[in-house]
Length: 340
Ligand code: KG4
Ligand code: ZN
Image (tube, rainbow, N blue to C red):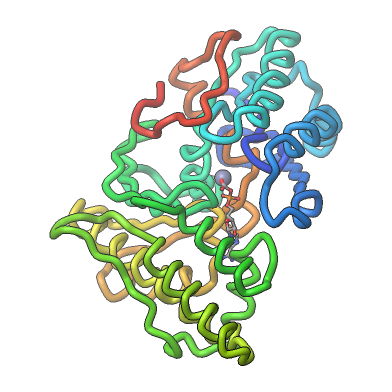
């Protein structure tokens, strides 16, 4: 089989990213332009600002990705773009650009589910990996335990009933005055704190449920911060951050290990921005070892939003002929279990 070159385009949130990937797993270029600096003063992503910035960046980022990969547009076999879930306006910028590119070079458009992208980052990092495996997907907008049955085939077996894990990290970071994005800030300061200083609650649901809830621990932390503020005493930021991080990681790891054992999968993967978390990586590795499972995760640059993971999915859809029409619309609430 001759090489298949897919260009991937990602613009679902605040990263404008374009990548060129060969045969699904070999990155030729992966340009990521983050807008974090633009959103910092608002303490989170402002959708309208994100869309406008994507418009400014998308063409230069496409040009840069082609240049870095040292290929011409005509050498591309397919154009993959995230079409959901995400911010409607932001998604439209990448998707419309992908349609224009696909039309101009007369190559297929391939709509990609953002979360399928996050999961697939593991294929790029671990060339031996094949389905089935169990994946904990934890990002700013999603927290799911997914059984990956085959390429493009997923069964969600656990999910958050309220906030996403990343969202909880971002909110607590703001309350502790650590800024945005919160995950990396909490991860860093936690290394200086005692993670047993506070025992924040871990919500358990009915027997057999693998769901999570992060609003309980989040409220407990906010109450604890209020208590210090009322007494006008200094807030032990590192201890609170470390104890909060532990409460979130404990529940994520416990449920993911249970899920893998129940489904008899031998490999447990992490995916999404929160998969950068050093405590989560350590804990999942340790618990997997105890249970004779193999823990894997992508390097940090492939955990947070990037287009290489989108191009990887694009490749697997390309080889099974799953192309999209040029009238494909963005779907902000797209579910993982109904992807075409
Ligand atoms: O996957 P991602 O880049 O975007 C979404 O699809 O949402 O994830 C972003 C999320 C943010 O909430 C950020 O705070 C979190 O990932 N994050 C982390 C870490 N690095 C990024 N959370 C915990 N620890 C980290 N080291
Ligand atoms: Zn993401």
